[in-house]
Length: 253
Image 1 (cartoon, one colour):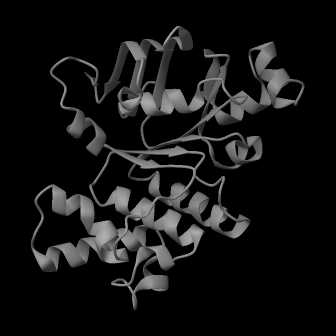
Image 2: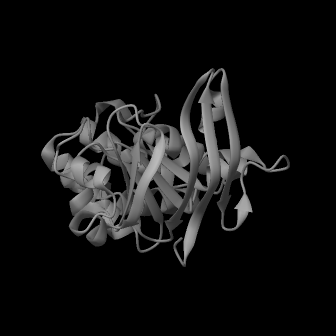
């Protein structure tokens, strides 16, 4: 277990109908680090990620047992407020989904929902979040134009700014660069390296090279089971499990 966990998973099981997708997962995610969840397709990576912000509950027929603690509090306890849980998490999907409104309104959307109406504060917040996402200089003269006119790479950075606007503690990325060109992927990776000073970042990736470049901590899943987890340098240089070594060397996929 990590000495400074931000997320702690205890005995987590997830079933889709009769199929068990995650099996007795016990895991700690360190604070203000980049954690990469890796493993073959269908091993439960995205399922684990979506359990962190309780998005799994939107899937019909899903059953969840165990607990996940954020800042020491179980987000699956009966009295937990789901909206508050999700506010702590900013989620980047594989494909960026911009809202059908302006660039400005995309970023302002969350703060407005949570009650921010002051135009001066809202404008300052939008600019700051666009700067954090390294997008401000590219859009500053057109922030009131439709977000759909941005390139795919710009849209993904806009989604990052929109997520940051509600002041989350944790950024979740479900293969957040898989739909991007190399230049846009590098821009998102660079943003993550900067943002980990202030946020805990957890990404799912099927690209081992990306995990090697980016991760401080690595989680390896295989067929719904946690095989190994640890600091990235140790994980890649001296894996404890033979299955981990086989996956890293490409013997299994």
